[in-house]
Length: 202
Image 1 (cartoon, rainbow, N blue to C red):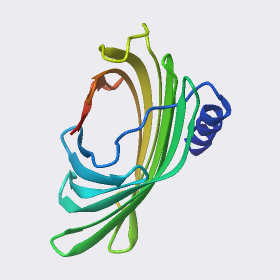
Image 2 (image 1 turned 30 degrees about the horizontal axis):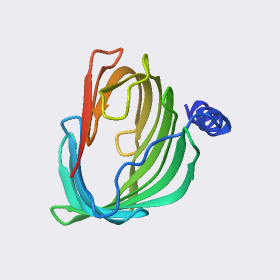
Image 3 (image 1 turned 90 degrees about the vertical axis):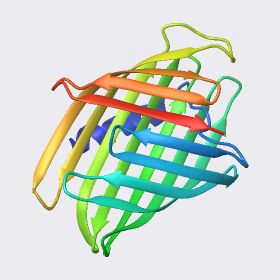
């Protein structure tokens, strides 16, 4: 899975026409939810940083804490955008120290989209989870700026649990809808697991 993940990242960033839109803006607030287990709310003091709170539920415990997102790189063209982010989180579960680090990127035109996310999580200083995912999609129609935008997407996600020594890969067809400050994603994995997420900007 690691070789596949690295290959997909190389493909994503070698295609200059695939670029992406910004997630937030200076002075903006953002609320995000990922499935039923993670909620994140942050404030962007400038176009390169956001700080906020998160809560994440696992199978047998929950984590709450702070998260900092930082824009490492951005390239804009007339019809496209590419972003590269670093994300760092600190939290606790009944006194157990938690931290995580992500590298994530996205690239988008009005027709095509691609993204990746690589996350490593620690409990009490020991590796807990490593999650790698890539997402590719296209718009079946080109919508005007204020209209409803639709994307058909495919997500490939691999999760390795170092404590339980398990490794799970999911393939998830998805639909993304967004209009203005609202974005919603819905998908079902090939194993029948529901996946959804939303982003609301204020």
